[in-house]
Length: 241
Image (cartoon, rainbow, N blue to C red; front, side, top):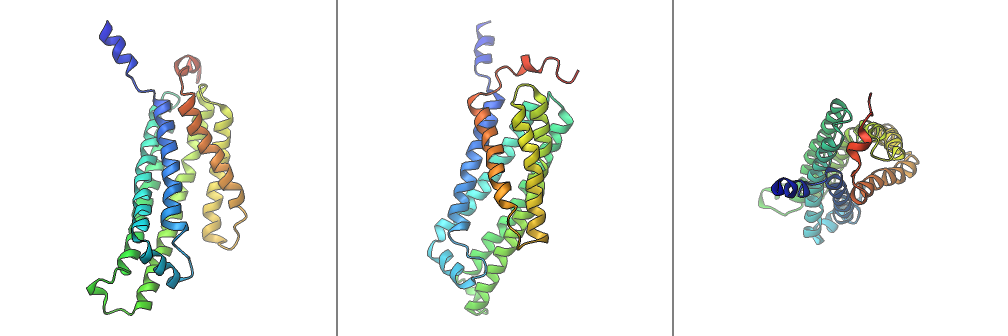
């Protein structure tokens, strides 16, 4: 009897686990962006970008590793949310898990082009056949391919928000307002994806999608971490009948 009670006390709350993973992912994602992209990559200026990367090689690598580690954390977050929300609707929960996994796969593949850009600037012997300006141009091309690959991943990251928001709204043990905001964020984030490829010069949509995304995802992670879902079973009684 005592061992049963002890094991129940040691059970990890899936809501708090999801909130913790989500919050750590957000922190690492922002940090890797600051370390590896925003401060070093100057799109359209191959010379300045090459100088920045060569002057801050470890910073660039840490940003890339943070990007990959963050992708793994994001997938684990989706898995924890799947565990939490599959009692609401297992098929829809599986859908958002698969969409998240698709985005993670594309994002990790695109990070290879971050590595390629640094290799092109590494002054390795096998690159002596190229002129410095050619290597800088190829490195910039790799960074543009990386950026496009990262944006392709956003179609998965945008699409997963709708089934996630729907289940949050329907659950009965999470705030419905967060579910609504997540579903709206799905639309704005997919619009951002379309804008990047179809109307690259029009960036006004980002002024809506980024703040909304912060409210939706940061808000969900904080709620799960602080509040958990202690009343999950009680609140779920009768949902879906």
